[in-house]
Image (cartoon, rainbow, N blue to C red):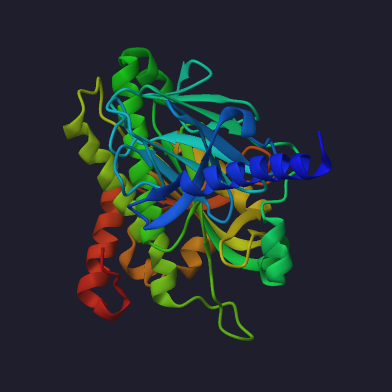
Length: 381
């Protein structure tokens, strides 16, 4: 073939491929943005970025999982990843990244369920490279190579402020761990579909409540969630503003109220209840992700103790256990909070630990008194 014809032929192919990628750009009407490229299967590039391939009748819809922490999936156009699938729920599931490169699939109480490699998702599932997700009649393939950089090269070239970063600093935090009581017994007595809807709804609403009160879900551990509030202390002191210190308490009460309301929405074999541990102290807080979409995680004894305090509530037969430092920093606790002091032996600790424990009704009374006697300190729900 003559050089001119060869150059024209190969150039034409490149042009056609480029034109195809431009013309098949997917527009998300919910976010008013283009979210991905629709490419023929033979053009799919398995690059180093975490991404999903949504299989459609026209090819594979490739969506990179970067520059955000949550990607909602469902039939509604308000989702980041809208599906043209009549068997998918309007708000079906979401993928959430937590920590350094961990991606979780969370069913949001969908009617037909979410499946990973053929197994129905009840509690949040940590996704692995090449996992196959099924939502309704839609198949989604998840790819996340072991060594990844979640910032595109083009963005690194344009603006160094979006570089992936990992910063650690010692911060004062409050950790809340909330656990669904008798979850194992519930799995044995509930139909799988109903169980999936109940637990999926609980996790979805729990995430919304925690976000509303200024925090985020830091970890999913089986049937429990962990949330962290990073406090802004006054210069030269470790005093926390009153309203800021009350946010975890308002969130915790909202979580208990939401859990109780689910008993009226679903045919449950026994009352759905939750228990919680709350602890305050200094910890190493890591910031990951880009400067525009930061993500945080906390490590240290303050976090470990919160989990142990949650476990202690079962021994005490109460709903909430506060660490001694949390109680000491809680505004008006000595006067208005009717929690009682207990001494417990926490697993992994040599010495007995002082905790202040009570019920969700005690917490309700406390927050009601705060609203009446100290309205400037209350927080709107």
